[in-house]
Image (cartoon, rainbow, N blue to C red; front, side, top):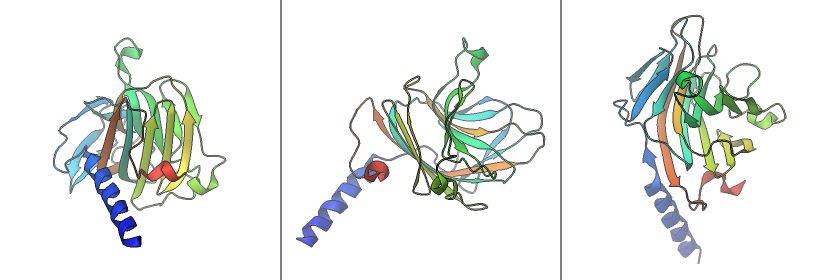
Length: 219
C-alpha cells in the first residue's frame, strides 16, 4: 500500500515538474526587455546580474509575455546596500506617467527592516502588505547567500514564500494581468548588484484551479 502511495506521489510530482516553464535559459536575455532606468543587466555564469548606475531611476528587466494566474519561483542574491524586487502583473502604459513601470512588487529587502516577500505597489499605492507582524518571514532572509522566492497569483489572491516561509497573503484585484520584471532600484552610486537564477513559472492562464502539489497549497 505504501509503495502504491509513493508511486502516486511521484507521478503527481512529475506532472507538476512538466508544467514548469524556464524563463531564463542561463545564456541570454531572450524573452526579456529593459524598461525604466539605465542600470546594467548582463548574463554571467548562468545568472542575470543587475548592476546599479549612478543617477538613473529604477530599472526593470521585463518579460515580453504577460501573465494572469501563475506560480513563479526564482533564486536571488543581493548586495546589502541594494533594494530590489520582483514585479508581477505589472505594466508600462504610455497613458500612465509616460510609460512608467507600475504594479505589484514582491520586495527584496536586505536591510534591518527585512521585508523581503512583502508586497509593494510600485508607482501607485505604496505598501499593500508589509512584514512588520511576520517575524518568521523577516528572519527567513539569508544575508550574503542565495535566497528563494515563491509566488502564487490566482485571481485576486497573491501569496509569497521566502525560503519556504509564508510571507505575504494579499487579496487585491486592481490588476489581474501583466509582465514579470526584475528590479534594480535607483542608487546614488555605481556597482551595487542583485543577481537572479533558476527563474521558472507555471502559467495557469485564466484557470481558477491550482495544479497538484504546489508548494503553497499546504498553507
